[in-house]
Length: 151
Image 1 (cartoon, rainbow, N blue to C red):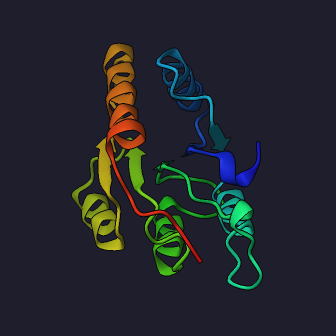
Image 2: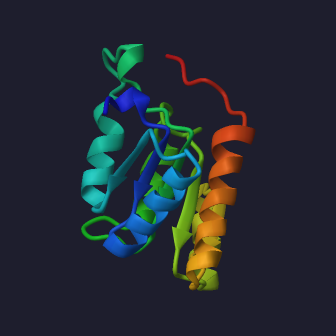
């Protein structure tokens, strides 16, 4: 899938939770343009591979409708990814939804300080998780309006 075609970037290292999210999104026809990455360092490389300040063609720009971001990732944490996204002019307006198992108040505060658009603690039950994925995807993919990223 081309960088500029991705609507949802799922950054999740737990294969079970990633598969559950992907299945639920596809169930509601919301996962056709989804790309999954399970490593923090790979996520940064992917996000910024098309967003170099010099000589970027508009066709290469990574500008998904939403990034679903876990916090506990190998190599680079979700908070560091969020920090890097917000620090770059070309990615700073991409909506980032933190989707994590952490309900620690310090994590919640830090993510909002770093510019998270939403913070969702993953529901434990299958039915609750399924409903949460449907609701958040419907909002971010169909209802939310955001500026077009132009150079």
